[in-house]
Image (cartoon, rainbow, N blue to C red; front, top):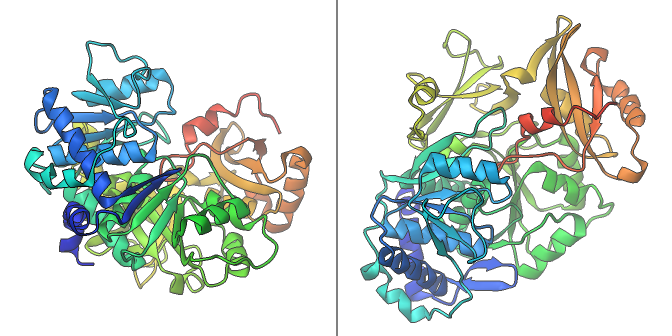
Length: 506
């Protein structure tokens, strides 16, 4: 698929709706939508927005967590010429109120009359209910969609305000154009070699950057997406994908860990041909286990940022063995440069801060000119992530600035400690952070989700780690959690983890 075709992903939707209206675009739980019905629902939303006073360029917040309602609303707002503001419906009322106050949307789309975002007064944004089951929309209505719609968002116009998950502080509203959002999806589709026959299963909420990216990536290739609420793993997840005819899966490393670790023998993957893992570091032990139990399924490791609308680097299956731990090379049209503290390019193999250049970089942060100026520098987008790059351009992520620290004068990598923790059979998921210490300066603290909580022992974990880690790299504490709080792209949320330290003594 060419870059031009990627930029016209909405055109692909109209084309398929006209010529193959019954072909499946989206499976949401028990509900299936062909291209024609999906577009008809989106066109119906355009008409409702216009009848309720929508003006081109208005911001529309989506307080929706069903895959079908969310994706229909997103496309409908773009066809109307509006800007989408996804809201994380799992956030507490105060956070929802803050996000809506920051974004100042003209409308908030909700799933029902009884559902209203907490903290939003009736005098605030206008509320519209999105109920796809209220009435059947005939596929024939598609023909009127283009004529009834306002002028769709132009490629160089703002299309989405995606709030970061605030891993270390207050969320920032990332402003991105339609060309950036669809361009990212199209280039990822190229890297995966997707066709109209592909169907990807997603298990993350639709309002996350990753959920949006997966849907648009398949749309740009003319394929389909299947989504289901909840968190599935092991044979249950594989069985669902087989039943739905999925050729691929997209999720965080924790998904792959929970799928392959409980399996002890080779399983039939059905029509599954590839797996995409992104957001956090994928343990080498998990890669090896996947090869053993799911032979023939291609594994793609990716690294992404909300500020580039999703994915940035891709490591193809052919390089998994030779480039262990790498997140790959940047997408077409994007450049990654590792820089020393003085801004000069760092020599190959040396760790420095990652800067990004290219047409997928955001326009800036919403109403944050100082933050935008610090991030969008003359050298490119300053990511805040640190890593290294080899002579062939492949990238390894070392983490954020605090992930490389000194403990009593000796350098420690929190990411390397995390890899070691994740390699243990007793651990299903983990995150390691550097925490201030009065004596040592900083120390690593491991937050772990046990594979078997009933029999889990912190002392056993420490004994295992002593066999594989230097003494200065051993976690000072092991904090047991039911789950690791993560962002939409799968990265651990530092602020939430640190808040859970009190009352959790090893």
